Image 1 (cartoon, rainbow, N blue to C red):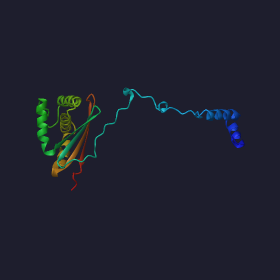
Image 2: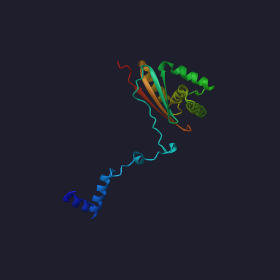
Image 3: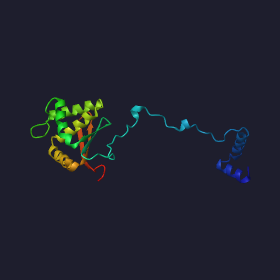
Image 4: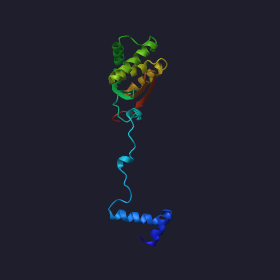
Length: 195
């Protein structure tokens, strides 16, 4: 060790430079590492139990192309994404078939759903989401969107306008469990393939 190295070592170690030199010589002579190599497993954070991990964020896919004349219904329920494509011209028949499937006519005379019908629709949605029935989840969300007690006129008018001229749309819906609150967004989508 040089004088400069010894001086530095002594100053850096608070007067214990000679001891450091001796330890370094012994380590080199015995082929032991001077600095303790830490085990990569020791550096990892301990695994968190599944119950403490953050669940993955589920989002709607806005990048996937939607064919002309198609309504894509995307529903997030119970942290799962349910998605179905439906031809715009089939929307009225699909709504009627859904109402028959439920077993009662859910729509009120003025076009709004009753509180009982809204509750039945939400229960069907939650049940279908638990069994991963994509089509029923999407259809019930569409029905609930079209017959919303407050927004039914606006929603029906907007979707009808998007359906004109073979347009495409994305209905993004979310249902908070246990089914207390629906959120809807309707987007006009560019035609695919682009003209």
